[in-house]
Length: 357
Ligand code: ZN
Image (cartoon, rainbow, N blue to C red; front, side, top):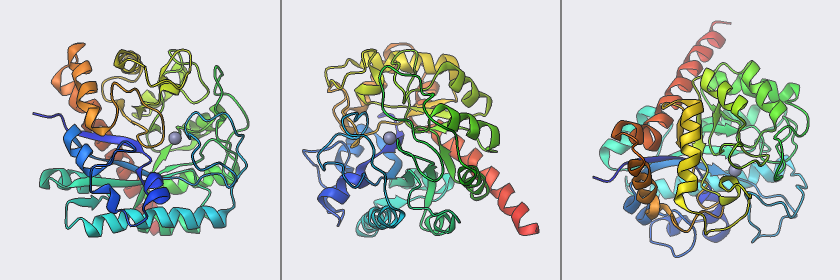
């Protein structure tokens, strides 16, 4: 039987926003990109966390995103960020409506489980960077109502909430200041709503601020082991210790820039390099702390995987190195659902507390 996979990070909505805002392209098999419904099903991918992402205003359209060190970030107005975010969320909603039940926007772990049981594809919504949210956080409430359940406080650029980690290799992630007062308030608001806080693009000081103030598990949806690929975007062992202490999760990023010890963007990167990251992450985070965060449609991935249809080759590599069936299922599926459930539980507590005042 094909192993079911729930993936922690992809940029499908960005690709569709650039190419086809009706979302129709998602249903047929595409020769471009990494994920559509046909290839996802073939690979055992039953759902995932779908990001909205707003490009820098001056960034060239075709430029690679993750690991792009060519152009320094130029920032982004809230007005533009909100408009593009809503446009990308609208694509997800059109896909759900056009799918006649085959795709479901999921607002809770219960929704994901129900979708998986019904054989429907589960889409959970994430925002990669909070530029669409203003200082008073009003937009967070509305975006939550629209289904957003996971939020990257920053992408790799400075915002009113904190400083995203710039792409550098080799480099420590300790680049720039920590979260602002507004950033700390955003973390607390996410906790109260049960929205997952994603530290993947945060710098080190921001990471430790989240570790200090967040009531929820620390989650890095798509980051690898710094000790094996020493770039600014990967997690140091000390950061992984903190994630483990919080009962959090890190998702293996398939981007070769974050996998390789030389930090190169090179599709000719063996699956064994991915397995070595998984081994190290398991050692640091434990069997309940490791998941997948492919970065499909946002990065160059090993040609040995290719696209969502190639996911069984990663599963086979795990099995070949002796991971038990239970461990493979935890990494591929269960760990995301469990950490989302733990985050939802914090939110139920937070909402209750707020209602009493
Ligand atoms: Zn990213």
